[in-house]
Image (cartoon, rainbow, N blue to C red; front, top):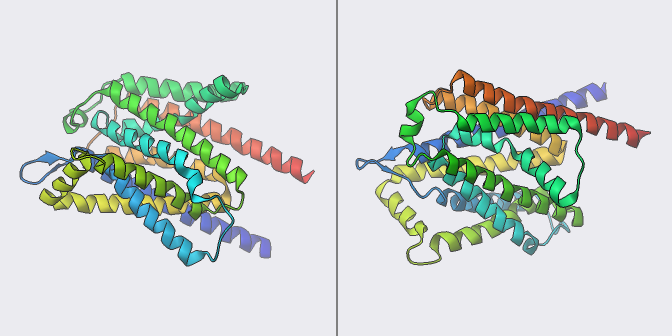
Length: 332
């Protein structure tokens, strides 16, 4: 009787984590698209300093992780020291900044679809740098994702509202920024894995604190490091348009809550389950953006979306099978 009860409890906990990740990041996506396209005030000004969102979110996440460590932890964990995150902090600063800047040139659904192709860069780096040999099913997954993203990028939108909302529409530059974002994210993830391997006692909150500490420092230098830095213009914009500050605060809180549930999911259920949740979340984000923002996708574009997520779903199934085989070997 205890086993079914434990299984039900575990399922309910997972459902709660899924709801937390989906709600936080889907709403953050709506806010992000709003901030990149909305005109504020009587003068109809856009918030052009989207990189400021990264600094604001770093600060909120830094405070959040510090509070969680104080509330739920006691003493030293024996994890990685804070200075080990300096290199990952650099790429974690540059990558998201490029991702946010891409919204000046492409729509949010297009950005989400491009970011779903992260596996392409992972396989490319694995083959060229580490000489990893991939299986035929893995190449099929990559073909589906790469083909879907490529065709989506070439298609014209089914509605002029997307282009009219963008400040400077330039699809080539927008997608280039997205893929550079993915490349930097790949280095960040690899560095985090290396740190966790060297310091196995590192807690999720320690990683969150270390990453956001360095990212805050780097973004402060970038945004306020010289008299003409864009951070001062962003602050002036908030003074003239205080309603934008409220949207940004909500954006940052969503990011902190989302990170919170992601780290909890990884610690309780593993990275594979987290990948499944975040992948499906991207698809839901595209649907929500299409319905709420007046950015309808054409039938062909929905076909591209289906192509991309078919590849991702196939990849997830392969990973599940691999994990099951590893568990059987360990039991044997």
